[in-house]
Image (cartoon, rainbow, N blue to C red):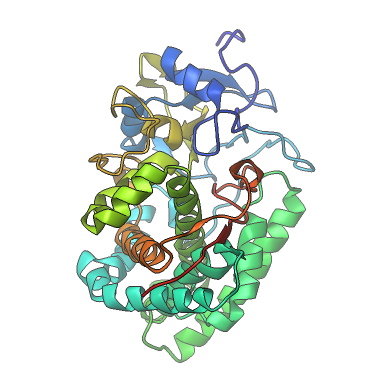
Length: 408
């Protein structure tokens, strides 16, 4: 591989094109070389994939492994206190997002029944009720308030806690440690301490559920003697983390995007039937879970390039979802767009297990928020909003909002 590459060193992460757009260097790279060589901070010569077709092909090809224990996955940005990887990471039992078939297939089948479209549909009224109760509480506050703290984070946290059987009273524990685990620029010891604290809490919880199961997803899994406590703990960790962090950031960043596109906001308020399409468009436009990694288990052709065995491949879903070869005017938020086919919820065997739950939460959340707060607006200049550029799931740290009246 030549060292003369469009991205010579590390992954571009600065949101210099605006809070919702990919970094300019990534956009330029997609235009010139959608499967591009990239030199990692530790010297590894890997790849960055930004084009829609190439990303979709990669995610459907299990030769691009999701495992971290068969080869070295190199980190594409500087991390303080983290030594250069010299050997594979240990496998985390039960964390099926870091597995390949057949292990991934086994774990996924154990969980599939809990997240069927039918079961999620049965939850719809309850999810709406959770959102409405949280909006009731927010309406009693004197603005300005932080939409993240008062609405975007509590709604999916409440829902996933009830589904999994995690006491919502323990939310301070898991929310703080989840956030610490997702910080990019932090010493490895701090990241592993957060993971350890959360895992210890969840191991105790699933052990108690195995002894005295209730009516929840973790109890259902605990009844399965084929799953070890370690696997139950790993699955619980992944479901709890993904079940509240991604949707919370979509609700907050989505509200920010709508407030910054007032004509789209007005159109959505005028015609609530556009909500399902609007949710898909916001998923595409924002792509909060942007960066994923794969490990090439053999030499593979992708987008006219040869990815050599042992290469770490970095995937940008945001860049792929903004590819003009797949979506017209991709950098425009258009709630009337038929954005299905976006990659924000994954593709292939790792298609998001909780995708229907996430959609229901976003529909209930956005519908209620826009109806109950018709004069909702930012309480600070848009440029002062604190972006989660330091986190592995993008969004906003806080979103101060205000209003002049509320309605039912």
